[in-house]
Amino acid sequence: MQFSHPSSQESARAGRDGDVLAVVSQSGATVSFFDAVSDRLLGTTDVPAEPHELCFDPTQRLLWCTTAYRSGYYHANGGRRTEVTAIDPDTRRVVEVVDLAPEHGPHGLALDPARSRLYVSVEGAADRPGGVVVLDTVTRRPVGRIDTDAPGPHWFAIDPTGRTGYATNKEAPFVSVVDLERGALTARVEVPGSEGLAVSGDGRHVFVAAPYAGAFAAPAGERPAAGIRVIEALSASVVDTLPTEHVVLPVHLTSTGRLLAGEIRMVSDPVYRLGRHAPGRLTVFSADSRRRLGELEVGLGPLTVTSSPDGRLAYVACVASSTVDIVDLETLRGLGRLDVAKGGEPGAHGLAYVPRPA
Image 1 (cartoon, rainbow, N blue to C red):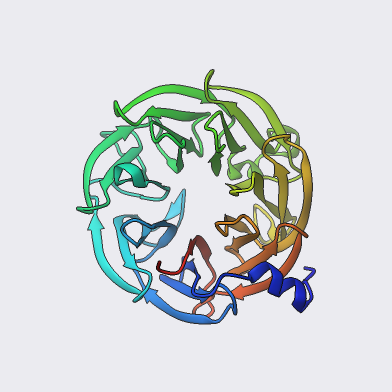
Image 2: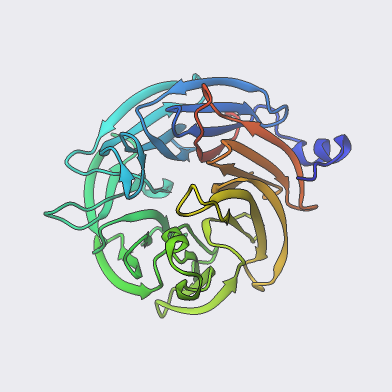
């Protein structure tokens, strides 16, 4: 990975005094807090195993963390968990562990601060399909559930109006579209299994990583083409595909309109059925023109991507190397790499950028 010289780092990090990057260590069952200027580790918070995603609520000034499984990962786990944890990011203390039982497998998080709603994707069971639990961020209690008609909704995003939500489904061949005001499924958009997603700033398009990462296991000639499907919200249909060389898991849209995709790269290995991880790739597109802007190498297994509020910096959490790459998006150069392994356990996953208190 190419790293920038000090003057470039200083320019990219200017004005971030007091800001913090929060990072999940999935196998270590912690959330780590790093200074956004110096990259210094400020402290860690223990959370229930096994943490996956993070979401920062600036209104309540709480950091939400989902705990999806007791061990393992989707399709290969030691049982599903039922909790989401609220953390004070300033004191780095757990405020409350909210139990969603009988719902289980919470993973994706999407915040509507205007309506004080947090949406949490949950997996299905024998008596119900997967869905989205609606939490009141003031009372921190569930106030509803929306079915997505698929067993494993994993990632969730909402449009800027807070009226429409989109759930990607790993093995189900569609993206679920839900009306958040009516609490009902309204459409299915056909895609060959899906991973991360992002909604455009005007709400007109949804960018969805497809196919599902399990496509690694299919023979090369039978795998769907990798890339990002562009869904038109009005027609609920795929209108374009942004091609990538490798399967994409995380997708993120910055405040400046850059679309970030984390490509998983695998190489053949007789010991592992799916191969072993090679350095991943962060690929950058323009969301407006859909033009590819560039790419750079990152750690092993990019699983979550976020950015600073000004859209200048990208953060790429890589689960297999348990590292976070910090990238200057204006120069497409690496500024540094954080190590979040605890006791040798891999698993960097969820990310959240937390601006300093007002």
